[in-house]
Length: 227
Length: 224
Image (cartoon, rainbow over all chains, first blue to last red; front, side, top):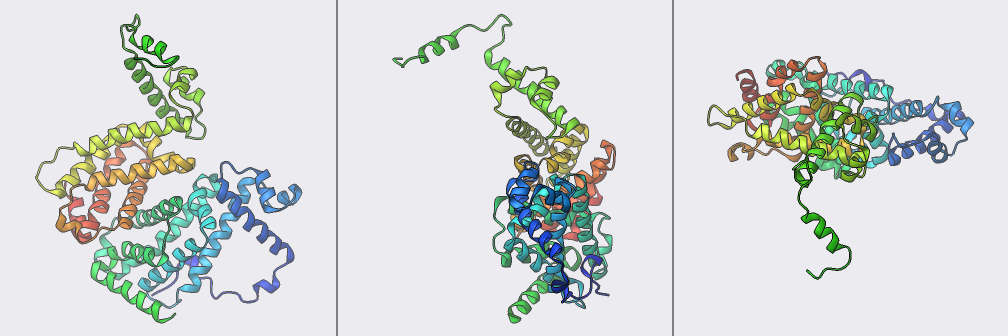
């Protein structure tokens, strides 16, 4: 029953990965991390390849060795951050947990990542929509994955079956919207305050107010106990 | 009276009678500004924010580049002025929607219908205010967000204390604006302006649900 969405269910975290990593991959990772900051600080439209080269501490030849150009470079930076976010969620969400627990612990993991990594978050939440057709396509795809995960909530109650077709798309957009607004204002604030409110928005349509509030309280207690 | 330097000269100029067209300076100014804004709307609807240049705006509005720069320093400034005007227009349409029964739910239904009607009749406005901003980013995207948040606020305005008391948080309001934006964009992109009317049940539901609960919101969304 309680399965992780495809994007989240990639088995266990691979332990030996770092040691197997070639120097090449390590270098690419380093460059992408630095370039992510350049995109975040300058904004996609005004960042030039010169900015990326300077910020990434890479030569012109090196840059074009790793990336086809600015757009491709952005897409790779985007994918890197999305992978980090999914890793974080996967680590936080017990694989056999029921849907509502996946929602609460997944949201907590997501929000804490965003609070810790505001620059990386900027490029996936704010710059991606201005990052060219391929970035927009992937951004929309990520939203669809989130909506598909939310849709599992329909199995939780009869009433939820009557929700409109596109309900989860709208909810996913709503959640992303509020994160974008806060990130743009530099006010993501306290993860501990934000994620329960987001959890309420997600859970209530499926569980009703009371069950949703109980689920959030339980999640909070459990989290407090595990620390 | 006893003012320094060049000021005296400007005073006299301002007292001159209107030009031979018989129109006041203010009128001409307002008219030019309105033309510029109308031209901006069309240019952005056709080309998007980034591709829209002052030259394009000047061409669409029939107002010279020079005149453009007497009103706005940059095209961004003009975009924001256009948002202001659209917002005013939309908010008035929403708030003045006639309500058949004296109930808040009926008012929400009427306001949603009015909003969808205005948007349905103005495809350029929809492209400018809803479709084009994400690709523009920056100040334009910020302004688009504020517009949607204000629209949501206007639609749910006047919620009875007893309902609002249950606690509609800031987070819920922001999520509502985002959902509204997504529903409208999907309705528009699902080709044809009349599709917007089809978004009525979804929009009513998403605006009412945080106040009255999902079940009652779904019921209200089905009847008009």
